[in-house]
Length: 423
Image 1: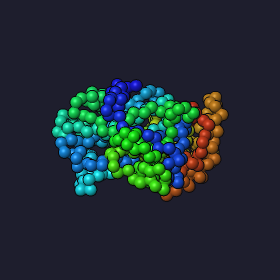
Image 2: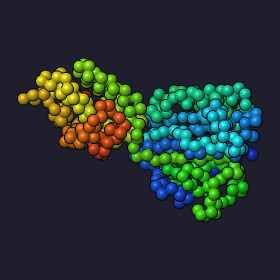
Image 3: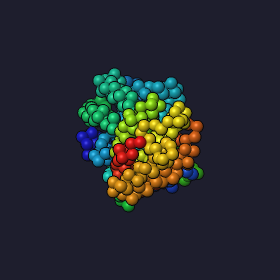
Image 4: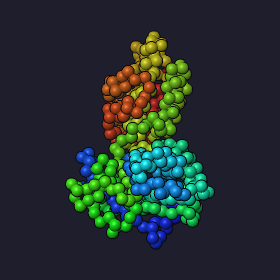
């Protein structure tokens, strides 16, 4: 457990502050599309969202006090245990004060974390709604932490982690100080064993500012709303108590590939193609290949699929440039069989041949041949779209499907192909 985790655990177990925390049973989630599936290593991504934060009497909370919501996720990333905090401070919450005339306030649909590939190991989550003294040094510092955290994109975690360590250390020191108290929250640790007592799985977690005895009725979920009642028919929205509703979501795919760090290398390689700097473009593409093969932000199957997709798109850009600007001249860096310039399909087949000659696995050769054979479908999935978008990448990855090749070996094959078939 991290130092911050220890502080949070101490706060949660302190006398007089423990409040209701429950996982809402899957059969109490009334949304027809919901399934409470468990996470399996390297098979999916997880996202954690604050579906709803409800302040039962927010006007009273702002009288000399400031609300502060803190979420901390601890998980395995890039082979190490990481701790990532997220702060919703007074400045962000102040934006909802205009609604205080109704005495209660909803704060909905804030992404706390993810998507992040689940790579195994236990995952812990702390959610806490605190109150601090308005105008105090702690309040101002937490506001600064919230500004820093909010300014950074936690989609690709590698750039955020160094800052996360600073935020974690600062919160760990300040949360134990007087003047900061927990209204409602809990820390839970989920097992990586789907058959364990507390498996890490999709679902809703409810944190309510009352005791178990105060709220004996079962909890229910409908359209992101926390309900309470003895039956689903009698369940009504919970409005008597402050509460947070958190959703842990299972995602089989990402929809934000172009926001990840490696996509900048694709843009650079593409620009170099259209500048006529083909050797530099191929070198830039190989940088992209290395980054994708080792990206901790992707599951293994998606690293393999994206490598195949980017490889196809690189050759498609070369073909497009040749067709539109230099139709009668073979470009440096392309494969030119007898009778004219190589097509993209032939170029990728040449990679497969080079991988076989280098003694790489049959799965690697098959992956490249699959891309070559599906070349028409790959082109069709991008038809009329000049820039690669997340939608295009997702459609092309579906064309590629699940490939058995190891991403590092597939990347090696592309590097070998670039040097063995220079043109």
